[in-house]
Every structure is written in structure tokens, then in C-alpha cells.
Amino acid sequence: MKCSTVTRQGKRFLVILLTLSLLLTTVSVALAAPKGKVSPGLGSRFRDWDENYWADEYLSRMILKGVVRGAGDQILPENKITNQEAATMLIRLLGLSKEADEDEFDLEFDDAAKLPNWARGAVALALRNGYMDLYNRHFDPEHKLTRLEAAIILVKAAKLDAEAKAQMDAVLPFRDASAIPRSAVGYVAVAIEKGFIVGYNDRTFRPNQPITRAEWAKLLDLLDRKLDLTKDRYQVKGTVRAIDLGRPSVSLLTPVYTVDPGKTYYFDDAAVFYINGREATLADIRVGDEVIIQLSPEPDLKILMLTVISKTTEVRGTVTVITTAQGTVPASLTLSSSDNTLTTYSVASDAFIQLGGAPAALSEVRVGDRVRLTLERNVVTRIMVEVNPQSYEGTVVGVNLGSNTEKPAVKINAAGQEKTFEVADYATIISAANSEITLADIKVGDEVQLTVQRQLVIRIKVKRTTVQSQVEGTIAMAVAATTTQPAFLVLRLSAGAQETVLLAPNVTVRYGTQTLTFNDLLVGDQVKVIKVNNRGTSVEIQVRSGQAQGTTTGQIVSLDLANQRFTIRTNNPPGGTSSSTGTVEVVIYYNQSTVFVYQGNVLQPSNLAVGQQVTIRGTLAGDKYTANRVEVTQLTGS
Image 1 (tube, rainbow, N blue to C red):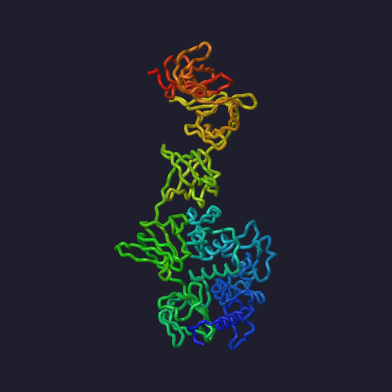
Image 2: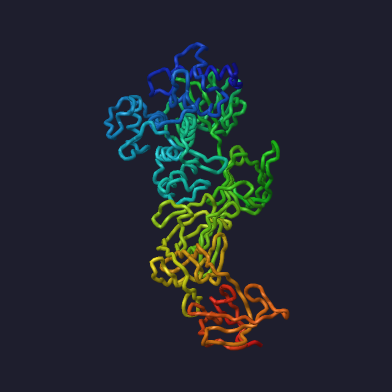
């Protein structure tokens, strides 16, 4: 059989070979199958996995290395992997199986007795080397490993703890980034950056989702490809220097695994090839490809499996043209480089796109954006849009949690100016104590720092939280702000006492779904006032005053201060009545709760004069109209 053609029969032969290797008890050798022909009947040993399975490449390589083993006639690829299985497979990948099998370990944690004998040494080494951790003196062997836990293990196995700890403040480019604990952010950032693990096409990471045995095999395979951590003498990594189709072989430059550059390796008749997760042929391999090969045992040392490690390159430029995918034609980007050369690149359908520190879609990339593209065989697999996030610091004056028609938003007062920003659904929100919180935990009065990208908040850091309280009562008096004092309410409390509440300049007033103003507050309204640092920042009207309300404007025509009343001539009287001439005289009553104002300054009733133009808010009971607020808008009638 020519090695340049991969057939199902060849694939089956390899599976037979791999299956036999699993039956051996020596775990320190990655592959130790007996020479000679084997019974073709064993080719169906793994009845739950075939060559069309999505993880075929990863399982094949990990089985060849002795990392993954079957259970009887099954490989159980869809079973959720447990802590003890994950530890065992990791230790095998790192070439520490012999140490795990031969050494004796004292397992000093509370549930050590739950570990089966086959996992004890591997778990002990995983804990000793810091790849995995105990929680409250428990290892929990049967716990189903999650994606977040997997990412942390991979980074620790790669000895990148210091790099992870340096990135704890990273903004993760996932819509569900808020579900990742702060203590794990750096580990996920490094795992993504190094290519140990990737997100999903919907731009989520799904940190708490358990992973399967096949998925763990893939992650270990990716770790093995990216770094040179293993001690496998039957694995060779290098760059293809020459290819011979006549005597099927490749010559490799192998700076990592051997000091024999240009060594030639010949292919076994059953050899298989993989490029980008798909089976290929020797004719598809190119000079310059970086590859990993798995060899048969001595003395043959022939290639059983060749995997092309997609070699990535980076290009930078400015986007000049964007086309979307049409049928079988992929999307593309045209870049202008520093020397004004235009180059067009195809974009992979599952390309990962990042807008600064946030996840994005191709539709969010704009002509004129500066981008950094990652290419694999000249196809774009990653797009990094180079934007400069802006930082704003200020005091929160409003929070909108969003609805079906409104997006979540936060309003801050920054240097005397109020700014409102929509908040991304994947935004990271950190408390003053550096713990993960939600937008609902942000309070009016909090001092915050916003990271804003294209007018969208992707990170909120609370620098100082506010002290918040509330008071409920019935409005006995509402006095507007003047140049010398803030607005305030006098509330009658349920116990009969009174409390004066000073109001913030930007106080919000709401009644049900309506947004009102201070001037809409009425004596008799039952309200709940939220106080921040002893200033009312929010007034919620719970029960409206039972009296009818209205606004009227007119000119004072007579005064009767002794009886606390005056008369105005108006064409918009309270209640809607008017004379045939279009104007009517209305008697306005006032009391000790009525507020008199001119240009923001509080007046006394004695300051009123005939001829003044006034605007009055008040309540109408029967035919008696009592003013709550009288604003003099003009000192004379002229």
C-alpha cells in the first residue's frame, strides 16, 4: 500500500495497532505493539468511536502516546472526565507514568481512600507538582472537570503561573466573562493566548461546563503541540525539509527532540496524516510545514502518524475592504500595509475576533480599523482590532439594568459633566474589595472607573462604594433649591415624627414607570427616599396624594394676605373652566407648606404684588385651589 494514500483499511490497521498497545501493562512506553500481523477482528474493539468522529485526530495521537486508554471495547469519548482521570492522563502526557507507578506516596487528604489504585500515583504527582489543588482537604476524585478548571491545569502544567498572575486584571473577550472568578482571570487569559483552549463561536467561554474525555484529549494534544513538555522518545517534532513520495519518507529539521538535523524518517504502511483536524495524504504535506510524528518501537522507528501543526504568522495593516461570506465563498479582508500594498485574505468561518478587550463579530470590524491578523496557511483564524479603550472616572448618578427595549446603562458625573454609557452584557464589574459583582450591585453615589470602547462599557471598577439608606413617609413640605440651600422634603413618618431630607441636585423622581421632577411632588404623597451619604438621590412615589392636582398661570389682580389668599386672572384655570371671554379670575389659597420662589430664591408671601405673573402648582379639592408652589415669573404685568 502506498503511504501517500490514506484508506479506511489503513485507518483500521492503525486502530488495531493502537488497541493492542492499550492491552499492555507497561505505561512508561508510549507504544509497544508486537511485531507481525494482528487479527483484523480487533479493529472493531472501540465500538463507540470511528474515523468520522470529530476528535479522531486528537484521540489517535493521544492513544498512540499511551495517554488515553479504552475500557474493554469502548473508548468512552463522550463521558464527562473526572478529576482522577484528568490527573492520570496529564501525568501520562508529561512522561511521568513510571514515577507514578513505581513511587509510593502518602496521600494526606481527607478523601484519599476514594482513589482507585490506578490513579493514586498520578493524583499524588499532580498535587505535588502544583498542577491540581485540594479544596478544604478534599480532592473529590469523581468531580467532573469543568472548562475553567481545565484551563487552570493546562497553564500550571505549562509552568506559566507567574504569567497568569500578572494578567489577573485582563479583560477577557467573552460574553460570559463575568462568570469567571477574579482569581482565575489570568489563567484563562494565558490559556487563550497560548492556544491551549479556545472559546465558542457565540463568543462564550462556558467556564462551568464539564468536559468530555475526547475534549480533554484534544486539550492535552494542543498543550503537547504548543510546548515541549513531554519525555516521549517515540515522538518527534520538527520542520519538513524534504519529502520523498517514491520511498515514502520525510526529512525533518528537529531542533527540539534530536541533534541530528535533516534526519529522514520512513512511513509505516498504515501511517495516517492529519492537517487541521482532517485526514490527508503525504502529497498534501509541504516543505516548511511544522509537524509532530509518532514512531513505532525500535528497531523500525517508522512513522505511524504525522500531524501538521498549523504554522501561524501575523500581519498588520489597515482594513480597506470587508466582504461577507456568500455561499461557499468565505468572507475576506483586504489590508493596506505600511508600504500601501493591498493584500486580500480569506477569513475562516470560525475565526476568533477581538475588538480591543472585548469579543466581536466580523460585522463590527470597520473599514479604517487597524488590525492584527493571525494566519494559518494564509487563512485568517484570528482578528485583533487595535482600538484604544478610554477611561472615565466619576460618581454614579444613575443605573439602568435594561429591559426588552432598553440596554443596560450607567450614568456618571465626570468632572461636572454627566455621561451615559451602555454596558456590554459581557462587561467585567469589580467591587471596591476586588470581588466580582453585577450591575445591580452598583449604587448611585459609587465612585467608579469605566473602561469604554466605542461608547460601550466593557469594565467597571468601583473605587469607593457609597453608604446608602432609605426613609419612607408622607410629604408634609417640599421646598425647592435656592442659591444658598439644597431642595429638601419634610416627611411625616409612620411613628408620627418628622424628618427633613436634603436632596441631591440630580435627584430622580419616579412614580410607577413615569419619570417626574421635583416640582411634581405633592404634599400628601407617600414616598420612599434613597439616601446616599445623607443626601436623597432618588424619590419613589408609592401612593399619590388623594387630591386633584394641576398647574395654572396668570397675573395677580388682588391680594388678601390676612386670609392667606390672592386672586389671579388666567386663561387656563385649574379644573378646565373659563369665561366666555377666555379668561377667568381664580382665588388661590396658600398655607405654611406653600413654597414661593423667584429665580431660584425663596420669597415670603409679603413679596407678592399686584401685576406679577405667576406659575402655580397646587391641588384642587372641590372648588378650592391650594397652592403647593408659587413661582413668580415676572415682577410686573408688562
